[in-house]
Length: 179
Image (cartoon, rainbow, N blue to C red; front, side):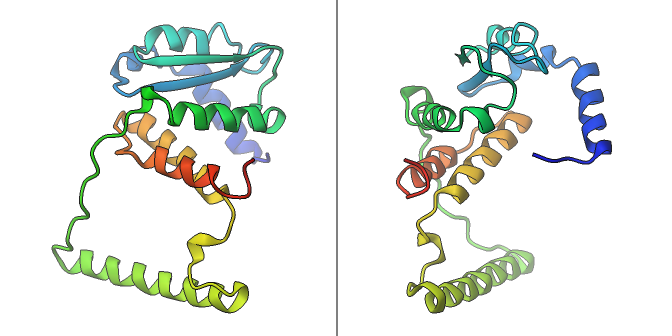
C-alpha cells in the first residue's frame, strides 16, 4: 500500500475535482459497490450511496464501522462478497465466444510468442514443482488479481466482461489461497 507522492497527489486531484455523476447512467452491467460506513477518506454518502442510486443494476454492500481500505482491514469478508456477487444471478454469464483465428502476421506472431512463453513457464514449473502446468500452482492470487483488474477495466470502458470475472473468481475460490 505504497504510492509516490506525485501519484497520490494526482489521484487526490482527480478524485476531488472530477464529477462522474453523468457517467453513472452508462453502466449496463450489474455493479457491486462495497464501502465502509466509517470511511473518512471517501465519505460513503457522497460516493457509494450516491453511485448506487445512479447505477441502475447496482448492489451496495455497507461494512458497518469499517474504514477506507477494506482490502486490508476486511479481506476475508471482501473476498467472500466478491465471490458471492460474481456467482449470483446478477452476474449471469454471456454465451462463450470461440477464439478468433489469427488473421495476419501480427496475430500469428502474438500467438507464437504467447505459446513460447507458456512453454517456457511450463518447463520451468515442471522442473521446480514436478508439474508441467504453470496454471496449477495452487494459488488463487492470480485469479483474484485478474478478476479485479478485469472488473475495473470493464467499468472504465463500460463493457461486459464476457464471463471472465466469474471464471477468474471461480479459479481463486477453488484454490488454496482463499478459504
